[in-house]
Length: 160
Image 1: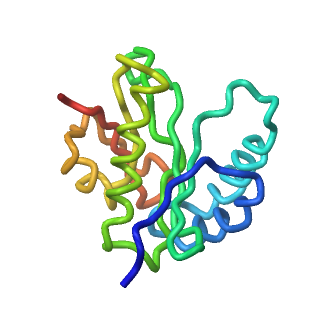
Image 2: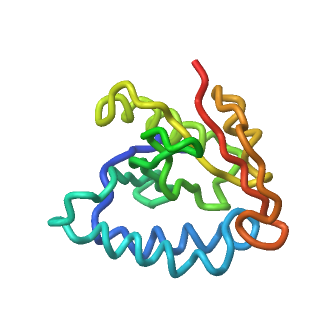
C-alpha cells in the first residue's frame, strides 16, 4: 500500500526526473518534438531570477517523483486573460491510480491563491479531454491534428 503523495514546489534538482516522467508519456500524450520544448521550460524554471516563471510543482510518492505540473497566465481563444495548466503529467506507470486527479485538484485549489477571479482554460488531446470533462471543463474548440499528425487539440474552459 502506498502512502499519500506529497506535492511540493519544483526544484532544479528535479529536472532529470521530470524529463523521465515526460518521456514515459511520449508518444501517446506528448509528441517527440515536445521533448526539447519541455527541456527548455524546465531549464528556464531553474532561473530563480525570472519573474515570469509559472508556479510549477512535483508529486512525490515513497520518495520518488511520479508527476509534475503547474499553471500560468495565457489569453484564451477569444483573447481574454486566463489561467492555463502548464506541462501536467504523471509517470505512465502510475496512470489510472488517481494521481492525475490529485495533481489536478491541487492545481485547481492553488490557482485562486495566485490568480483570483481569472477563468481557467487548458488545451489537451483527444486522449485526455474526457478526464478534464469530469472536473467541469467544457470543450470550446477542436483542432484536428493541432499538435501533429493524429494528435487533435481540444481547447477547454472550466465552467462553474
